[in-house]
Structure formats: structure tokens, C-alpha cells
Length: 297
Image 1 (tube, rainbow, N blue to C red):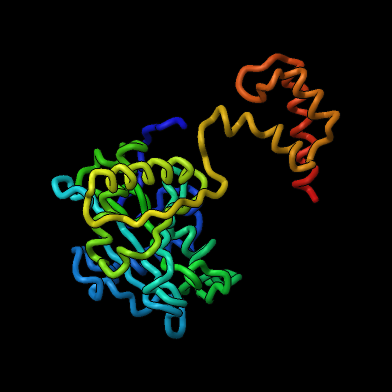
Image 2 (cartoon, one colour):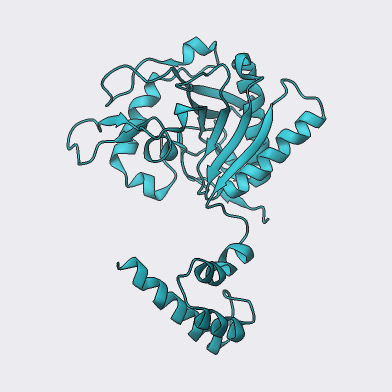
């Protein structure tokens, strides 16, 4: 695993993921939700969300949202959105969701993937984006925490702009501090099974955060986080592993023939990215050409 540092160019209320910046519906929803969120950490009932712009009707379960301060001196605050389980929140697992990037708001997951709502198809020029219930929401069986992390992503921010230059270890430490304070704010969930989940660059976020949680448990930090496991989808690990797996993955999935796989493997000696010889590059180009045909289907 390669740990990196990076700069998050966003400020509070702005999406730092370029794809989000070009998504008017999500940007507008974030802008409308932000004024409804109390800044100071308070009793959970003060974080209760009673309605969402664009959705008509009662919410399918209780929702909460707000900020938790992870660094008092710099005023570094992380935004979260909690969706209680629609089944049995007292017993069901609590799942933290992290989108990747680095720089993607977890509102991506909230409205495009596993959250309780999806956007209605079609544009809404001059009006609010419409939301409808997602029948496949993970909140059907678990309580979901959508966390904007690190500071500078989505609606999380810092009063010290230097915090927007950050790294994987600092991000993990802040997320761990967030969890400790979150479980203090919601003590009724301290005994629930807890899982960390996410995708893409969260393949870095999740193991480093899980390591912080385990070390915190070993140090007897309170409250104890009842970590049971983690889930990573399409996760980043490191460049050598990720980029070098392209050809073996294509063969394993039956997307290229065994003859082509053996041909490119012999020419490249198991290295399929970076500086390769001309014959190897020719074979890799052949693999990419074959793969491109699937995209056109």
C-alpha cells in the first residue's frame, strides 16, 4: 500500500470532485441542505433532518446531519449524514460509507449508489432536483453514516486553509477522532456491529482507518468502537498492483483469449505498465484494442 499526501482544493459547501462540480443536481442539493445543518455539535435531536428539498413525503427512517469538530485549534470540522436503519436500528449494524477520489463527497454514494434516494430522471431547469426512494438502499438493513472526509471535501471544512494539504495518515487520524466523538454523541449505537465501507480511493482510507480503530481499542480508548469488519468496492491499493492487474484481470474474466494473454505475458515478462519494451507495448495495445470492442457493444 502506498500512502500519499494531496491537496483538497474545495472550501466548505463546494464539491472537490470535478465530476461533482459538473453535476448541477447534486451541487444544488448540497447547497440547499447546508443551511439546514446546525454548526455546533449538540444533542442528536438538534441534528434531526425533518425534510429534504426535492423529496415529497415522510422520510423512510430518521435522518440526522451535522458537523463534528476533529481539531479545535484549527477549527477542522467533518460533515456527516446519518440514515437510521428502516428495519431495527437498535440492533442492525452501523456502516460508515466513504467515497474516494481523493476529493469525492460521500453524497455521491448517498444519492447515486446505496443511499435511500435517487434523483429522478430528466432535467429540472430552474427548479429543484426531484428525489425518489431507492428500493435497494443499504438503509433497509443498516444505519448508514455518510462522511465527507478529509476536511475540504464536500461540506467538511477547516478555518485553517493549510489543512487542505493533507495525507492518508492524517485523514485516518481525523476519521478516527470523528468516530470516537460520533459514538459519544450517539451512545445508543456503541454496542451495534460497526463496519467501514467505501469504494475507489477508500481502498486506502478504509484499511488505514480500520488500523486506527484497532489501535485505539488496544489502547482502551473510550468509547470502544465495536468494529466487525470492512468492505471495499473497486478499491485503490497501489499503482504497481492496480495497473499491473489489467491484463491478468482481462484474461481471468474471459475478455481476452488465452493465446493473447500468453503472448503479451511472454513479451512483457509480467510487467504491463510504465516503461516497457516496444514489443511489449505493441501487445498491450492489442489487448486495449480488444477491450475497446466491448465498450462499443
